[in-house]
Image 1 (tube, helix red, strand yellow):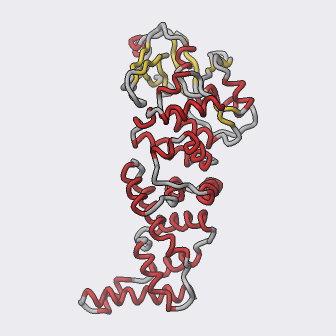
Image 2: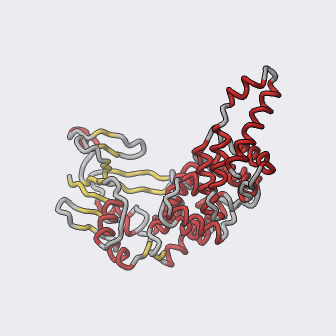
Image 3: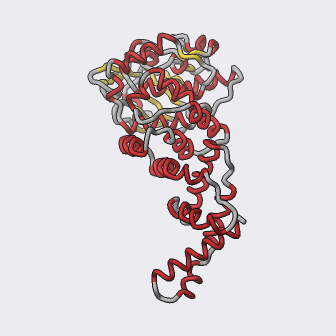
Length: 368
């Protein structure tokens, strides 16, 4: 029984040695020459549902038995897994997506690199390990995500051609929305998310998973600006969604995509309110009513943090700082609605009108 560190942790250590900064992730291990029963006997805790994966008894690091996979149906779930003591490390690494992810460290820290991952790292190339790449459409999404992370890495022509063939052959049609969102979200949080969109467009996959989007150069540049300032996922997603063909198209796309609620809400708000927000509050009382109406549509008084994210998305898209909108929102929220209501009597309409008038006055004073 032998244990090896595999995958991303190996890649990132080698990148670090090349002077390329990386985010430190967890170590993943592969064990060769063991059975599930032997792992359990040594104190490992089984956690894998589809194949033998365990947690180390002390470190709690994830450890999998070396395995091979056989394609039996379309999509990324259509595999039969074979994990047994006779599966070699090289066979396990062969089922991985890219050569730079198909390396291992042995117990002495030596690199095991049967598929040329180190050479591709030095040459800054993203290349698929072998023909098994074509069996899993998620690997196209991962290819695009790694292109967003390693922006100066080129995609090998044969890898790009294979990805295009997969899309054209319908293999990518088996992708499920949850996994699409998972990979898009990860790619948006990389340093150069625009490149993910470029790769997805070049492979033809973008037209399959998001035909409602028309990414323009302005939106792609805004995505990278959002990354440069460390914007949260919801802001980056809203910027991407701003290139929907229409409001109806955006609604259709969000209906299919299993994005988180914060991201979807911000995307809808940005698309709907962007024309109004572009016109910053004018000075004086004349514009206070319009400003209050926009703040109400954004639910800015109850959700000030989300309104700040909305303005952050507007900043990376259109370049304005949103200071006057923030001042208006703070002023409107500062009105003591309870005190105003107490003076307005018992009529609900009169109370609502009095509160609105007080907020308009506060907005006018704050933006004068």
